[in-house]
Structures are given as C-alpha cells and as structure tokens.
Figure 1 (cartoon, rainbow, N blue to C red):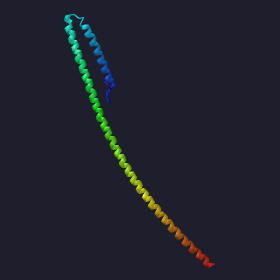
Figure 2 (figure 1 turned 90 degrees about the vertical axis):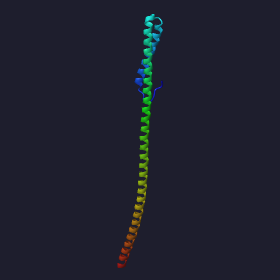
Figure 3 (figure 1 turned 180 degrees about the vertical axis):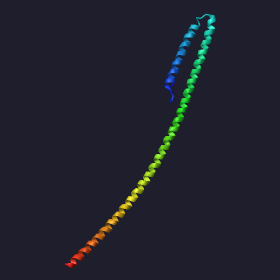
Figure 4 (figure 1 turned 60 degrees about the vertical axis):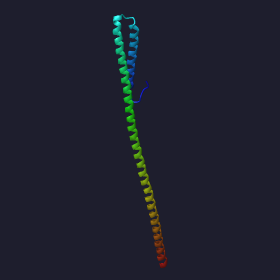
Length: 142
C-alpha cells in the first residue's frame, strides 16, 4: 500500500508489522495444523479462522484510516488554497489602490511642479521689473 498524504507513518508501520506477524503466525499454524491430532485440529482451525478475521479487520481499519486521512488532507488543502486565493485577491486589490495613489501623487506632483515653475517665472519677472525700475531710478539721479 502506498503512503497517502496526511497518513501517520508510525501507525502504518506498526499496522504493517502487526499484519506481517499475523501472516507469519498463520503460516506456522497452518503448517502445524496438519500434524496435530484430530482433536486439536478443530481448535487450531478455529484459532486460524479467528486470526484471519482479526487480520481482515485490521486491514479494513487501516484502509479506512488512510481514506479518512486522505479526505481530511484534501479538505485542508482546499481550505488552504482558498485562503491563498483570498490573500492573492487582497494583494491585487492593494496593488491597484497603490497604483491609483501613485498615479494621483504623480499628477499632484506634476501640478505642484508646474505651479512652482509658474511662480518662479512670475517671481523672476517681478524681480527683473524691480531691478529695471531700480536701475532706471538710480541712473536718472546720476
């Protein structure tokens, strides 16, 4: 049996060892049963049948545990994938908001830069007029 995701390797190893022990015991009892006297043969056959039932029950339990573990793993995996998808969606939305803010900031910065440039031109023009007026005023005195 192949190892299923989410199964417990220690339990599986124990179960397989137990199954091997049962198989070994069965083989030994089956071989020895033919040599027993008729009166003990019935008891041996009964013990063999009981061991076979125990083996079958253990195998069924092992298969059930593996199936349940695989199912639980699949459910958990789906939950994890859904959570990751939500995180991705939130990240995409956050990126979009950041892009909008950055774009708005670029526009605001561009508008601020244009206004500053216009203010500098106006100041330079005013300073030039003042300078010209001061020059005219000082040259007229001389």
